[in-house]
Structure formats: C-alpha cells, structure tokens
Amino acid sequence: MLIKTLPVGQLETNCYVVTDEKSLDCAVIDPGDESNTILDYLEENRLHCRAIFLTHGHYDHVGAVEAVAEETGATVYLNREDDADSRRDLHFPFHLTENGEYYADGDSVEIGSLRFEVIGTPGHTPGGVTLRCQDALFTGDTLFRGSCGRTDLPGGDTDELLRSLKRICSLEGDFEVYPGHMDSSTLTRERLFNYYCRLAMNS
Ligand SMILES: [Zn+2]
Figure 1 (spheres, rainbow, N blue to C red):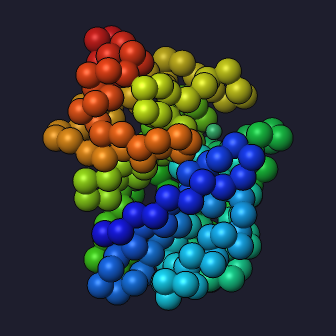
Figure 2: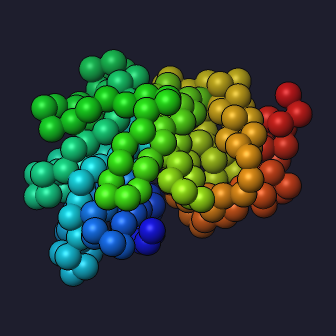
C-alpha cells in the first residue's frame, strides 16, 4: 500500500491517493480541490482510480470530485447523511448521482488487494466516516493530530464527536492516522497526548 498526500485548496485539505502497488488500482480520498494536481499524479504514476471516498460532505473535501470522477470513471462513495439532499445547507454542496454509491458504518469496499472498512464517526458532520485500510486510518475532520474537528457548523454535535473519538481510540492496536487537514500521526500518540481523545476515553 502506497499513500500519497496532496494538500489541496485554500484550506489545504489533505487529499490522499491510496494505491495497491501490485495492480496500480487506487482510491482517492477527499479530492477537495485542484483536480489537475490529482489527475496529474494519477497519470504520472499510471494509476487506475477505482473509487473516490469522501470522509464527509463539507465543501472543502468535495470540490474536485466531479472532475476526478468524470476523468477516471471512478465510483464516488459518500454517507447519505452528508448528501446535499439530506442536509440542504450551503456547507454540504455535494449530491451523489448515478456514478456514486452511499456507504455507511460496517460497509467495506475492495480496491485491488486493499480493503477499506467504513467506520461511522459522526459529530463534525452527521455523515462523517473514518476509513480503515490495513494499518491506516483516514479520519477526515473527526480526529486531527493533537485536536479534533469543530462541531459548531450545521449538523455538528459535540457529544457525538466524543463518542466517535472514543470508538476510534478503542480500536485494537496502533494505526497511522491520516487526518483531513495538517500532519499525520499515530493512534498511540493521539491516545496519549490528544486532550479530546483522553476526554473521550474517560467519558
Ligand atoms: Zn469538515
């Protein structure tokens, strides 16, 4: 598994390209902006983009979905709760069409030899998910290095976010944590030093 981080857009959203090196099949997580940057990377490395996974529906995570999906033919995955049809709010501009599928907690999607498991982690948004693939967790705006996502936007819920953090921190073993913004981390580090994780685990 090869993970490439492409910070895109004004808010430097982390777009991740996760590749199965054997088949060169890949998934693009949160193509928030700069479709050309993402498509150039795919082309330069001769990757076959099979899926676009969205950790949630906020505008800074979905801006380049249509362009990347159109160019690659990849299937787009989103939790229904964060679809523009469900939320009817400017913060959630993306609506899934025929090239997409809704996914939710407990689902899994295979890309080449990689298996992505969907863990429902609402709180930052109602339809927020964390994706687990081998020893990597893609936590969107639920868990950041040393911090967590805001809950003051429409649909946000602090209690729910803490329950989601507790669920992530309760996963067995250690993981690399790849958040929606800023630097990556490890789950061990977050369990030890992240105030919100500690609060969540003790609640
Ligand atoms: Zn967000």
